[in-house]
Image: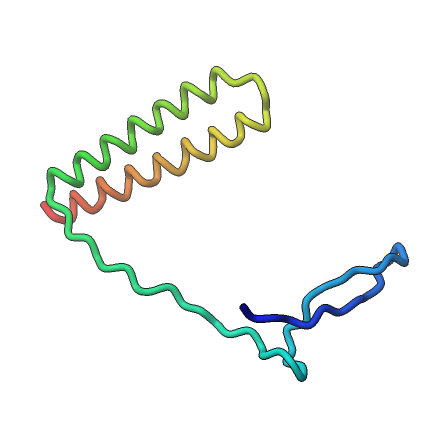
Length: 101
C-alpha cells in the first residue's frame, strides 16, 4: 500500500482542510499512472448485432415507461439519461450492422 503525505490547509471559512500531497516526500513516492489493459475488439455477426440492437431498443422502451410512471423529477432525470444512452447504443449497433451488410 502506498502512503501519501497528509497536508493541512485553510479554507475560506478558516477551517482546517486535510488533503493528500501528490509530491514526493522523504517517505512517499509520487503517484504512478496505471493504465487499464487494452480491450480486444469484438467481431459480432449480423445476427448478434441485430439482437444487441433489439435488446438496447427494449431497454430504451422500458426506460421510457419508467420515465412516464415516475413522479419524482430527480429520478425521472435518471431514467431519461438511461433512455438516451440505450437509444444511442442501439443506433451504434444498427450502424455497425449496416456497415457489415
